[in-house]
Length: 179
Image (tube, rainbow, N blue to C red; front, top):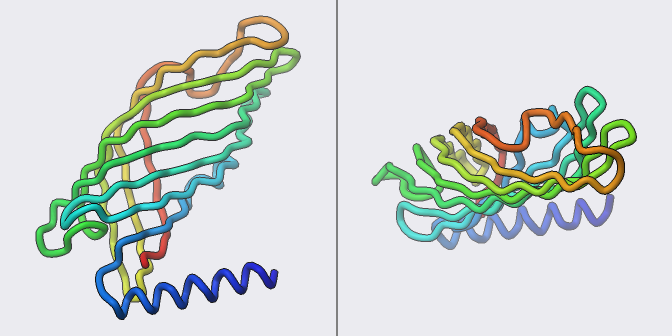
């Protein structure tokens, strides 16, 4: 608990100093929807130019549905273009193409295996920046994923929730702090 308080105080001090120096260049966020599916989802966004930023997302999950258990991680690099000339990068409406790599262990009854998937898509969203660097980011967009299951024990008949290949939707609501 002491370490958490010390790190929190350091981040708060760093944010205060950075806010006095000038424009915020970095943003750390957490997806508020991800705990609904037993997932932790975190993002780091960095301003690249007046209207662009790059974001790197990471998630870890222990999701299960109808007897199928997925445990693993994913990495999501993303480029964002902010349309507002007045607000610039990291605030306002944006469009963002992204890629995603996912690596899971999968089990269903006596069957076990690994699932690797790669995909991408295009998001639209809006990020609101509030006083003190607190921000809220709402996004949604289509995605496509292509994956492969490698059976390590049992037979090859996994019933994977949401499928292995195909189109889907990526959506989220993040809460973060910019510094």
